[in-house]
Length: 422
Image 1 (spheres, rainbow, N blue to C red):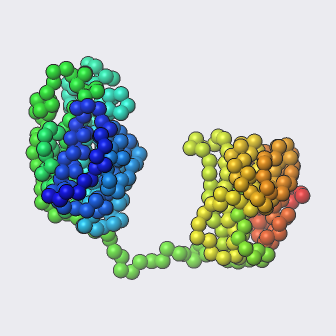
Image 2 (cartoon, helix red, strand yellow):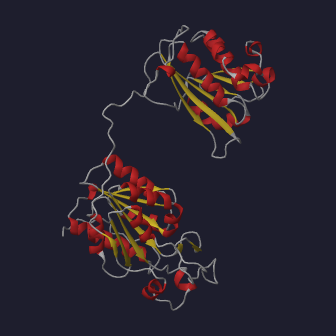
């Protein structure tokens, strides 16, 4: 055993008596027994009580969405494909319920990783709701009469899926050797640690003993499979086809006058064509012989609030997307103004094109007011703005943008002459 500490030494962030702390301590002890280096360990967690342990580990840590730690761990294991590294995934029974397909898929493919399931038989972080691993008769705050059905036997499922090593233990005392066996197994291994939540499980089931509960539930404490050599290997195609198809090759049809990159931000309201306008401008730049990137931004709830897009157009290759300080800022609505106000404040030059009904924000750019909405209405204001800008800047031929516009079904609804009234 080495003397490396895998933990910060600060108090673990769990309720008094929580089995999660015991798992953490046994994990550290197992890693010490293995003599592995700190930075050869990648610990992946997700949302749930177990996940708040991230800050306590000195290893690499990755924190994901609820139920997705196995998917993240699988991706890491497949990507690094390095037996000297150890990917350890922590997940609760709630997360395992949400991410069941990730567990089965990772076991089936044989990703070289270990999943430690913190099974306290309920969702502890959100109030004690039952999970798909809640045993029959087990009570929770939201199911005070007790579960009327048996939970999944996760170990049986993962064994059937093709895991290399699967074991269930009661999470009391020193079971670090169990974790060593799992951590050193080749391929996918899983240890299900049975616990009881001191905040919800104990209070809802007074007098219940964990070992008796596990026994009565029919969840056998044993090693289900061990030393099965099944490790994921990346499929290699000796004759891969090119990812670049002639069908997608962009042919230069028009000319440009651009000698250096220009970054353009379009900022307006959802449903008013910001993303479409940015795409049209980008496509037009490409057929004018230019390179372009596009980065869209909008709220999680699509269709409401602001919509913005950052475009870079350059005669040279572009290796990134987005630009926090645009050369050109186009604002077509109140939503767009509120979103782009910060970017406008950072501009020390360039131009700001803003709808004439709006009050210009504080900026170091030249402000030009344009009747975008009055000329073409709210729905087409963003599209009109790129025609107006191209006419104003002449960075490439207007015919390129006309071609893109006429090649889209929008031209059946909106006359191009409308877009050319400057």
